[in-house]
Image (tube, helix red, strand yellow):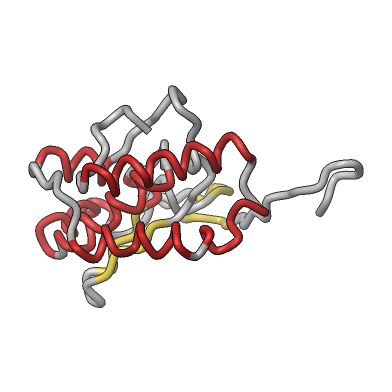
Length: 162
Protein backbone atom coordinates (compact mmCIF):
# COMPACT_ATOMS: atom_id res chain seq x y z
CA UNK A 1 0.00 0.00 0.00
CA UNK A 2 1.41 3.40 -0.94
CA UNK A 3 0.74 6.40 1.24
CA UNK A 4 -0.57 9.39 -0.71
CA UNK A 5 2.22 11.86 -1.38
CA UNK A 6 4.85 9.31 -0.38
CA UNK A 7 6.92 7.83 -3.20
CA UNK A 8 8.13 4.69 -1.48
CA UNK A 9 6.78 1.98 0.74
CA UNK A 10 8.11 -1.21 2.28
CA UNK A 11 6.25 -4.46 1.88
CA UNK A 12 5.78 -6.38 5.11
CA UNK A 13 4.97 -10.00 5.76
CA UNK A 14 3.02 -10.81 8.90
CA UNK A 15 3.13 -14.32 10.25
CA UNK A 16 1.53 -16.09 13.13
CA UNK A 17 4.41 -17.80 14.90
CA UNK A 18 4.06 -20.55 17.47
CA UNK A 19 6.43 -19.76 20.31
CA UNK A 20 8.29 -22.38 22.39
CA UNK A 21 5.65 -22.20 25.16
CA UNK A 22 2.92 -23.10 22.63
CA UNK A 23 1.34 -19.64 22.41
CA UNK A 24 0.88 -17.95 19.07
CA UNK A 25 1.86 -14.41 18.33
CA UNK A 26 1.85 -12.08 15.35
CA UNK A 27 5.26 -11.18 14.02
CA UNK A 28 8.17 -12.46 12.08
CA UNK A 29 10.25 -15.50 12.78
CA UNK A 30 13.28 -13.32 13.53
CA UNK A 31 12.80 -13.58 17.29
CA UNK A 32 12.18 -17.31 17.39
CA UNK A 33 13.08 -19.58 14.58
CA UNK A 34 13.68 -23.31 14.90
CA UNK A 35 17.41 -23.91 14.75
CA UNK A 36 18.28 -20.40 15.86
CA UNK A 37 20.21 -21.82 18.79
CA UNK A 38 22.75 -23.00 16.19
CA UNK A 39 22.66 -19.63 14.42
CA UNK A 40 26.36 -18.93 14.32
CA UNK A 41 27.41 -22.42 13.28
CA UNK A 42 28.13 -21.03 9.83
CA UNK A 43 31.17 -19.14 11.15
CA UNK A 44 33.00 -22.45 11.54
CA UNK A 45 31.20 -24.34 8.75
CA UNK A 46 31.47 -21.81 5.90
CA UNK A 47 33.97 -19.12 6.93
CA UNK A 48 34.49 -18.13 3.30
CA UNK A 49 30.81 -17.14 3.04
CA UNK A 50 30.99 -15.28 6.36
CA UNK A 51 34.08 -13.38 5.15
CA UNK A 52 32.35 -12.55 1.84
CA UNK A 53 29.29 -11.36 3.75
CA UNK A 54 31.53 -9.13 5.86
CA UNK A 55 33.02 -7.62 2.70
CA UNK A 56 29.53 -6.97 1.33
CA UNK A 57 28.37 -5.42 4.61
CA UNK A 58 31.44 -3.17 4.83
CA UNK A 59 30.94 -2.04 1.24
CA UNK A 60 27.25 -1.19 1.60
CA UNK A 61 27.70 0.28 5.08
CA UNK A 62 25.38 -2.24 6.73
CA UNK A 63 24.61 -0.90 10.20
CA UNK A 64 22.52 -3.75 11.58
CA UNK A 65 23.69 -7.27 10.75
CA UNK A 66 22.45 -9.20 13.77
CA UNK A 67 21.51 -12.85 14.38
CA UNK A 68 17.99 -12.17 13.18
CA UNK A 69 19.03 -11.22 9.67
CA UNK A 70 21.52 -13.94 8.84
CA UNK A 71 19.83 -17.17 7.84
CA UNK A 72 21.95 -20.30 8.05
CA UNK A 73 20.77 -23.37 6.17
CA UNK A 74 23.01 -26.11 7.49
CA UNK A 75 21.72 -28.75 5.05
CA UNK A 76 22.57 -26.54 2.06
CA UNK A 77 25.74 -25.15 3.63
CA UNK A 78 24.60 -21.62 2.71
CA UNK A 79 24.04 -18.37 4.54
CA UNK A 80 21.56 -15.77 3.37
CA UNK A 81 21.80 -12.12 4.31
CA UNK A 82 18.38 -10.55 4.78
CA UNK A 83 17.01 -7.21 5.99
CA UNK A 84 19.04 -4.44 4.44
CA UNK A 85 16.97 -1.61 5.92
CA UNK A 86 20.04 -0.09 7.59
CA UNK A 87 22.39 -0.19 4.61
CA UNK A 88 24.16 2.61 2.75
CA UNK A 89 25.30 4.39 5.90
CA UNK A 90 26.51 7.95 5.79
CA UNK A 91 29.83 8.81 7.47
CA UNK A 92 29.52 8.90 11.24
CA UNK A 93 26.18 7.08 11.30
CA UNK A 94 25.27 5.06 14.37
CA UNK A 95 25.71 1.35 14.06
CA UNK A 96 24.04 -1.59 15.73
CA UNK A 97 25.43 -5.08 15.80
CA UNK A 98 27.61 -5.96 12.82
CA UNK A 99 28.31 -9.65 13.37
CA UNK A 100 30.08 -10.45 10.13
CA UNK A 101 32.43 -7.47 9.93
CA UNK A 102 33.24 -7.84 13.64
CA UNK A 103 33.94 -11.57 13.15
CA UNK A 104 36.21 -10.89 10.17
CA UNK A 105 38.14 -8.30 12.22
CA UNK A 106 38.45 -10.76 15.14
CA UNK A 107 39.80 -13.38 12.74
CA UNK A 108 42.33 -10.80 11.50
CA UNK A 109 41.14 -11.23 7.89
CA UNK A 110 41.86 -7.66 6.88
CA UNK A 111 43.33 -8.17 3.42
CA UNK A 112 40.82 -8.25 0.59
CA UNK A 113 40.87 -11.26 -1.70
CA UNK A 114 41.67 -10.85 -5.36
CA UNK A 115 37.99 -11.44 -6.15
CA UNK A 116 36.94 -8.68 -3.74
CA UNK A 117 39.39 -6.17 -5.27
CA UNK A 118 38.22 -7.18 -8.75
CA UNK A 119 34.57 -6.71 -7.70
CA UNK A 120 35.34 -3.17 -6.53
CA UNK A 121 37.03 -2.40 -9.85
CA UNK A 122 34.12 -3.79 -11.87
CA UNK A 123 31.57 -1.81 -9.86
CA UNK A 124 33.45 1.42 -10.43
CA UNK A 125 34.09 0.66 -14.12
CA UNK A 126 30.43 -0.12 -14.71
CA UNK A 127 29.18 3.06 -13.01
CA UNK A 128 27.81 1.20 -10.03
CA UNK A 129 25.17 -0.50 -12.14
CA UNK A 130 22.88 2.50 -12.06
CA UNK A 131 22.60 2.29 -8.28
CA UNK A 132 22.73 6.08 -7.98
CA UNK A 133 19.18 6.18 -9.37
CA UNK A 134 17.95 4.45 -6.23
CA UNK A 135 20.27 5.62 -3.45
CA UNK A 136 20.26 9.12 -1.95
CA UNK A 137 23.24 11.16 -3.20
CA UNK A 138 24.93 11.47 0.22
CA UNK A 139 24.61 7.72 0.78
CA UNK A 140 25.91 7.00 -2.72
CA UNK A 141 28.92 9.26 -2.08
CA UNK A 142 29.62 7.35 1.12
CA UNK A 143 29.40 4.02 -0.73
CA UNK A 144 31.82 5.17 -3.42
CA UNK A 145 34.17 6.53 -0.75
CA UNK A 146 34.13 3.19 1.12
CA UNK A 147 34.82 1.31 -2.10
CA UNK A 148 37.68 3.63 -3.06
CA UNK A 149 39.29 3.32 0.40
CA UNK A 150 38.99 -0.46 0.28
CA UNK A 151 40.38 -0.61 -3.24
CA UNK A 152 43.26 1.73 -2.44
CA UNK A 153 44.32 -0.08 0.75
CA UNK A 154 43.23 -3.55 -0.41
CA UNK A 155 41.91 -4.06 3.10
CA UNK A 156 38.65 -4.18 4.98
CA UNK A 157 37.63 -0.92 6.57
CA UNK A 158 38.20 -0.72 10.31
CA UNK A 159 35.06 -1.26 12.38
CA UNK A 160 33.17 1.95 12.90
CA UNK A 161 34.61 3.70 9.85
CA UNK A 162 31.68 3.17 7.52
